[in-house]
Amino acid sequence: MRLNSNPTRRPILPVIGTILLAACTTAAQAAEITMYRDPNCGCCLAWAHHMEQGDKHDVTSVDHPDMGAVKAENGVPNDLQSCHTAIVEGYTIEGHVPAADIERLLAERPEGISGLAVAGMPMGSPGMEHGDHRQAYQVIAFGPEGRSVWANYSANDGSPS
Image (tube, rainbow, N blue to C red; front, side, top):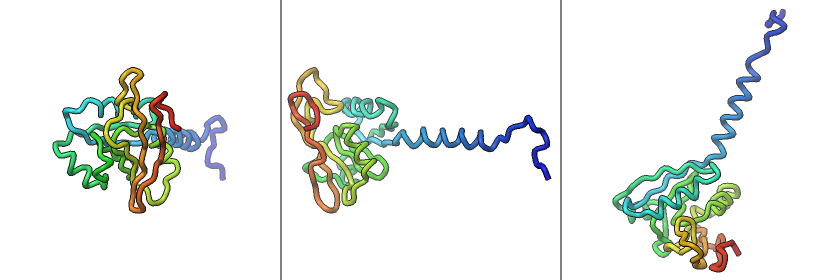
């Protein structure tokens, strides 16, 4: 029994499958980030812009009147706090963490790490750019098993060291 009696008619299933696969691949590349911020802080929006470059992340900004509660609810240690708190794929991202460090976290997914933080607001970190002025800073991985340095950034050129 021949199901397709028209020899010029091509099966549509492979075409639909290819379209769906392409749509899923594109969606998987763009990580959804929810960023909680004080509505009076402008550097948070600059960090969100940094994250959206290259179409790897989509950032939704949520103005929140009680950032202390957001940080406590998401397990951000007091000494690692900064101006905004973001959530991406179950991880907490505190402050001006560079996109490359978040992408590495999402790719590696190490056990015992619940988030990354850049304490304070170091000059030269993403969202805190001010010409050639830079401070050295660290990205700290934190979680139930403690803390470790995830990346070091130099004051000279802002590159990881």
